[in-house]
Image (cartoon, rainbow, N blue to C red; front, side, top):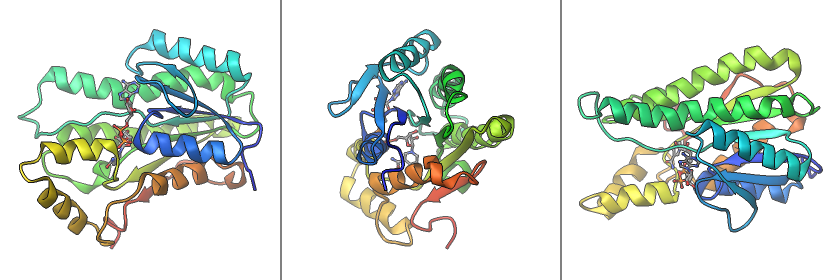
Length: 241
Ligand code: NAD
């Protein structure tokens, strides 16, 4: 079943990792895909856009609407990391990460909502993280930004349910993406750090970007119209087992 034939899915951060896997999964299911990212996508129609810049976000969403004529799905996935306790990160770092990870999602939602209201199958999927609820060491800023994404998801689901717009989030565990590869590269012993991350997962391995993408597709799928205001963990059982 195609599920998304004739629909348009906007994927922020879709030029790499989880976003790229989600873009591919929507395209495989018949959707028109628009990637909004700092970098162009080699595989899909894309528009460069910094989600921390409201003007760029509005321009990019207008370009998607002009090109595809409609927006049915928004995958709010662009995000950046931050390492440290509250003593380690400056106000400037806090503002920057929240500007991208939280306000970036707000800006894109604001720009897409008028288009989503025109769709019979409107859905927003935000990428949160296991960090929102796992109490990870040295991740105060990042965890707070993703906890806020979870709360935003619940509030938006309530605000827009009467309009038929569903809002959910995915909460990936450590996923094998270029982001994690960069983190491992910075470790003193990348192989040992990878083994530590894998051992943390009950499955003994990292989550794949495709596994997270499958959950994003599930949450956006018009077949799942009763699913809104939920967070779907894709973490190899890290929190539940
Ligand atoms: P990634 O670095 O591979 O991809 C992130 C993409 O977002 C990149 O293409 C980047 O250019 C884009 N991006 C970054 N800042 C942007 C901005 N200001 N405007 C527009 N685009 C921007 O990372 P990933 O691992 O695929 O992570 C994707 C999402 O998943 C992030 O929100 C991240 O917090 C979340 N996440 C990742 C993991 C993990 O272990 N990889 C776990 C939980 C949650």
